[in-house]
Structures are given as structure tokens and as C-alpha cells.
Image (cartoon, rainbow, N blue to C red; front, side):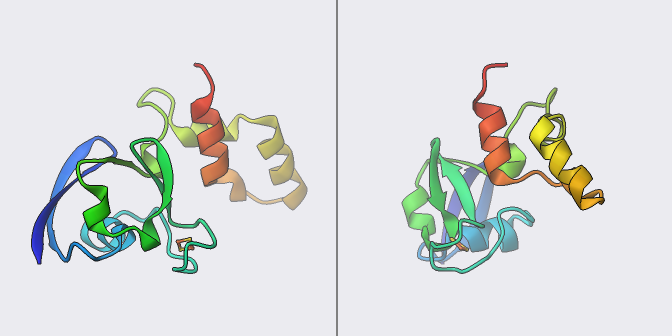
Length: 123
Ligand code: FES
């Protein structure tokens, strides 16, 4: 066990954890974040993807020791306080048309890919 400080979505969090523990477990179990998700646990599906210093990594196979002083950004950390990711995503025509064809309100949750695309655009 070690005392580890993580910068996640612009806030510092200190936890007691094994430095070999995957970042995903710290984000979900210690910090209580419900995103990223656990999918395969094998760096194959991308459900656990986060950014560390702007680089996409699979948090299920990234040990806490590899994070160091890196800035971790999850899906919830994308966007700005004025324009959250989910708002930008909902306004996209492609997203709206997919939602209509399904006939549901399932579009409320943004996808990682759509949020990265919308946050990469000039505002
Ligand atoms: S959970 Fe599938 S890539 Fe990490």
C-alpha cells in the first residue's frame, strides 16, 4: 500500500492503494466515478479509456505507478462548465437522427468518441 495522489478531471485525490493496481479500479472504486467502465479488462474494448496528459490509455491495464503526476481526464471531464459534453453531443445531427430511428430517449448518454470529437473542435 502507498499513498497516491491522482489529478482527475482537474481535482487532486489522495488514496491508499497498491501502485500496481489498475487505474480503472482507483477511478471507479476509490473515487466513485461511474465512467470509465470495465469491459474486457484486456485492453481490447476501450470501455475504460481515459486520457493521461492528453494521450488515450486503457485504464484497465495502466497501473497507478504509471500515472505519476499525469493529469487524468475521464469522459465526465471533457467539455467546459459552460458547454458540457452531453449538451454538445445531443445537438449533433447524426446523433439526433440515430435516436429518432431507435424511437427512444437513449441519446442522453454521450459516447467517448463523440465527446472527444466535439471537444477537439474549436469553440
Ligand atoms: S476494459 Fe476493455 S480495454 Fe479496458
